[in-house]
Amino acid sequence: MNKVLRKVQSSFTSPFWAIIVPYGWLLLFFLIPFLIVLKISFSDLKLGLPPYSPLTEWVEQGVLVIKLNFTNYSFIGTDALYLFTYLDSLIIAIIGTLGCLCIGYPMAYGIAKTDPPLRIVLLMMVILPFWTSFLLRVYAWIGILSPHGFLNTALIKIGLITTPLTLIDTTFATILGIIYCYLPFMILPLFASLEKIDHSLVEAAYDLGARPFQAFLRVIWPLSMPGVIAGSMLVLIPAVGEFVIPELLGGSQTLMIGKVIWNEFFTNRDWPVASALAVLMLIFLIIPIAIFQRLQERQVRFLDAD
Amino acid sequence: MLTKLSPTLKTFMTLGYGFLYLPILTLIIFSFNSSRQVTVWQGFSTKWYRSLLQDEVLIKSAWVSLQVATFSASAAVVFGTLAAVVLVRLGRFKGRSFFGILTTAPLVMPEVITGLALLLLFVGLEQIIGWPKGRGILTITIAHITLCMTYVTILVRGRLSDMDRSLEEAALDLGARPLKVFMAITLPLISPALISGWLLAFALSLDDLVIASFVAGPGSSTLPMVIFSSIRFGISPQINALATIIITGVAIGVMVAGWLIHRKKY
Image (cartoon, rainbow over all chains, first blue to last red; front, side, top):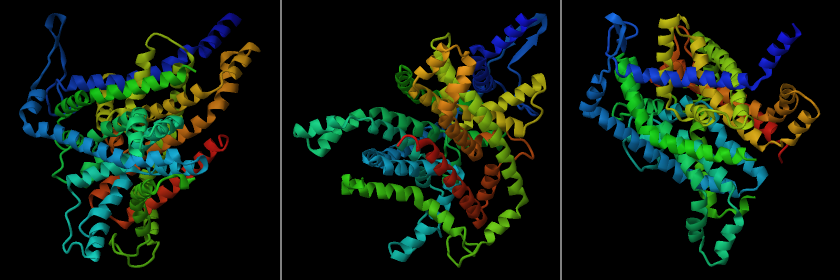
């Protein structure tokens, strides 16, 4: 009896449970769902719930037949609108990422050069908007950019313009929204790598006669590269699939893939096409995601190595 | 202090922080506007806060969101911590690098894809094993746990790696069982990461619109879903009032958490 009890007890303390619980969870609720998306992207649209036909069928004599249906993909391939949507999403996301980098780099650099008590306040001020509602931060820009919004009112009062500019429902507004919402994601990794730079290297560059710009270009910028890449990936990847920002700020003229998947799914109720679009988007994103993962792994391995 | 920075850098930083905070400031100011017009100031009033309290749909959805966020943040802390301990402390095991990828992948996955994938899973599961019955608070919570545990894992992993291992080793040498060591030594030492992980998970769950929209069922609208549908009809001062309440709450939360985490460091 005692033996059994001890066995039960030791099975609870063994690392087996520590592995199986999070691992099992992620397998079931993260990996398997993607396999299902892949599967459904190859099936037909059907009326009813769920609105797709089964992929595998048991034919007589117990033969399992797998029907791979490429119609969804060929449908997407023949409609140029989808191709343009993918390209537009990528271009908008890249411009947004560059915008974040241009605004975020000087800020991260300034924070890294500030001494601790104030530095923490400055960092917290970067993190704070990131914690407040994403949706409400996008909403704030509707009030600013709309025809009778703050920006147009202010510009008319100054006398720069006489009639309101069309700012809302444009691709410009979408890019602005992306820069605004994802700026903290850029600043934090940038700060982390800028903070680690050994200042004596910069001083050595100055001693050797480098001008500030040269010292930046030859020493600081290359050393901050891991932060630049990590920050850019953290902005680029979610920005490509962004739904809320193009929906609220982009209007009908801005087509982004996240919005198209949403509409295929909720408005057209075409789950197979939505799945195929999602699979294609993942293929698009696999390279940036792989870069980010490798960087993340290398950094963590460096940490784990004690 | 700031004097070290060049004037150009100071200008950049002022503009940057202005860019981050001016839109939020406009939200707060116009929540006290007496006019329905969100952009024209007509006098101070708190009537939008009062009308907020009478909006039953909004209050019900806020309650749903709070429930989901509390449950999913708590579960995410447990699962995320376990995953971090496995990655940092168990050394090499078969499938470790795959596990590492799996724990960070939800972080970079576009929300639309995660939401779609989870919904398809829930629909499929319901067909095959009859669970989960329909969609609602349960499915939103499961989706949020998956999303949030990634963030917890990253925070706890960093903390565990920074930690001095000699305390754990000393306890083991003195004959404490591994579980006891974990409970008595490791957990208290990583508690700041657990607190910030819980808060981050809570905030993320409270904030999520896209994933929740996919996996929610009728009658289980979360707060962001209700806000989103009302924003689609145009701007309203009531949403500004709600934004002010959320921002104030978050600001207090972040300051308390920041104080808790940094008070020992400096």
